[in-house]
Image 1 (cartoon, helix red, strand yellow):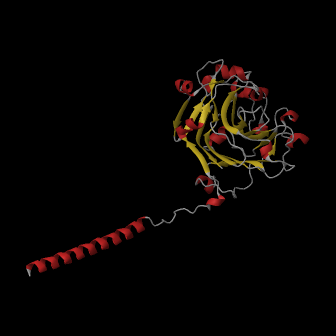
Image 2 (tube, one colour; image 1 turned 45 degrees about the horizontal axis):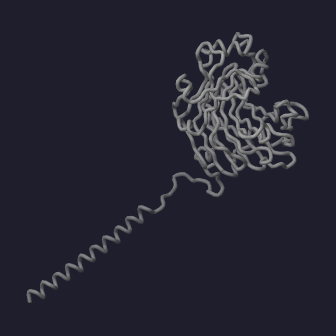
Length: 359
């Protein structure tokens, strides 16, 4: 009798333990299901199929890895800038990061016949089907400087695969110049943007450099704070290159007016950004791929050169600079100022927060 009672008790305990294990497993399953239940998004985002896909995102000091530091100067536009590599830039205290941005400027020693500067070019290339978003906090703003943020084909003879100037100007301009440069055959439409043509006459829509003394199709932003000192005072903004086979569009959004889809990192393929600052669309239906391809993003600061020197003694009110640089600096020539007044070049630097490339 004792044996049977013991066996019966053991059987009951086994059954109870099995039930407890089963109940616990079901409880764990319910808990896991709750853990993995999709959470409601705190911010609505556009449908994935209608947004650009992020290819790369570089910000702050990490931008050093996005760019190559070039030391060659092709010399075609003149200038006395001596482009230096990253190591020499560090040794000369010309580069660093702060407030989430990469800062890089020119050498500010008082006297220098070939003043050090930077020319950066992206390691990756891109063509039609690309959106590039560049957040710029500060750009060079001083007489004698020629800053530019642009794209060009690195491996092709210029301008066989085109050039796109996103930010460009000289001296104390306050209005940005946007342009493209092509081989013969690309004429642009004269509508669909809010900037003004830089050239007059029949050639203003002809982007062929041979027909326009290398100027191509140039547009000037009507925004009086799109370049130089007022741009910097407003803490810059975001420039967007939207490059499709149909057209090349440039948008500038000042700080505080950046569209939500760009800020969120999910830019729409059908944006409601308003009219672009500049739009280069073939008037004959030409594909941009026939004139622009395999570009790198370039950021550089030339010093003197053809453009700033040619207007050194001139009023440049057409671009927001009412006094000549000769009057502003007290120097008769650009080269004399840049060579002897390094202590006046504290504002000749870039501060870039990020570069995002989408496809």
